[in-house]
Image (cartoon, rainbow, N blue to C red; front, side, top):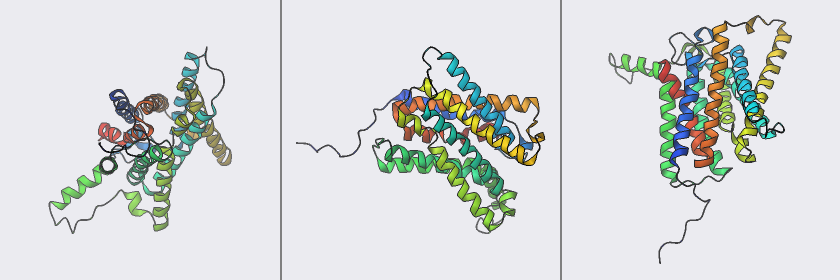
Length: 307
């Protein structure tokens, strides 16, 4: 007679186009860091993450790039564009919150620790949201767990590549048991309270990042209507926070960055938005959990270009 069908959500059809789109989205988003060589804006000069671009001033111009992409999308789809989509605005607000939490975590415990925790949380959180909220089908929970574990290990290994290389070199001279893994100076000098705060904020940032594009899937909106609201929402929130900070400090000198830095930040924002667009296209074919998890592996690409 054969076995009865397994209970559970329907499985998404295998789609090679969706898988390729998810991988390409990860590569494009990770490569955006090539246009933000800002070692003096918060990264150590020898850090493999120095090309990712950091600091509140940079993020303002980065979201300006998102806003520029939104205007371009609205102009291209002008005949069918009618109103700002509320789901896109929600994603834009999540985007602004994600980057703000990301910055706060890095300032507390350093970039290597915060980035590894944030991106790993985003990888696992994306899969959980896809399975629980959107009922994405999972063919094998065991293989899914193994894949997530490998993605997390790869992210930690990429973000900690300098520290691991130093550990391996030192372990050749003495017993690996006696040699401790030394993290970057900001983590080593941070107090216990600062470490706890940084770890918690990193996890919160990763959770927010995992839900970054979830509104687009929940609302099932047309991408042509989603993107204008997404970029404008992210830029509006970031600009409001920046202006409020400038008003409190009564200074705007920290916003004056070199022309090449501003241009790099805007271009990085445009590229990152292109990666998000491909991620959403992939989600329509292979599910949100798969596409967003792969997209969250972008730090592997960033470190590869800047190692």
